[in-house]
Amino acid sequence: MKRTRQKKILKAIQDNRQATVAELSQLFNVSEVTIRRDLRELANQGVLYRAHGGAIALSPSAHEPPVVKRMGQTDRCKLGIAQAAARLISDGDSVFIGSGSTSAYVARQLTDRKDLTVITNALTVATELASADGVTVVVTGGMMRASELSLIGHITEQALREVRVDKIVMGIPAISLEHGLTNDYLPEVMTDRTIIEMASELILVADHTKFGKVGAAFVAPLERVTSLVTDSEADAEMLTRIEDMDIRVIVAKT
Figure 1 (spheres, rainbow, N blue to C red):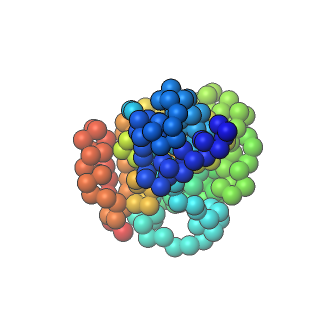
Figure 2: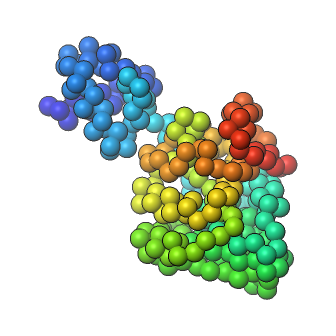
């Protein structure tokens, strides 16, 4: 009975995008204590978000094809973002570059740098920099996520805890003003959290499709970002609100 009720609760929230405890209590003719317990259990399953007095539905991040396919497509937005982000990295820096096609585009812009150290958990990033004479590339170990050609898991996280860098460059599947940085791929979340501990300067690279989305698992508050590099199609009002958080916003020319 509980499982059936919770399925109905979830559907009601998805249909209406949100619901209060009082509304759900009346709808299903159970106590508010029971509804709160159901919402807590559903939130723990990652299928909705708890809110004050009720719950809200997830706005799922867009499904993306494998990184190899994304890298094989010319994407002016991502190229522009990568060029703008690369200008934030100087000769002599040590930088972590994460997985994803936009991050790999960033790596592609750094091949002429001098005395640069790049640590990465992305095979795509390592490949882009393999022939760069002035760049030392350090690749973490770990379990490979085939679709992203990235290394994740406790081996990766242990390796990341052993090093520090000046700057972090990473992407994220979903960005929300209310819910911060989130990810739908749960096995990657702890790796993401370990990455953002490596340096105080976090450069987030994200095209306009990532905004206003909420993934299943929380990674970090939006305030953790120091610089956000995006494209001109990103929602202007949302970017203004992000700037109000003392986050540097760079809109790339695309």
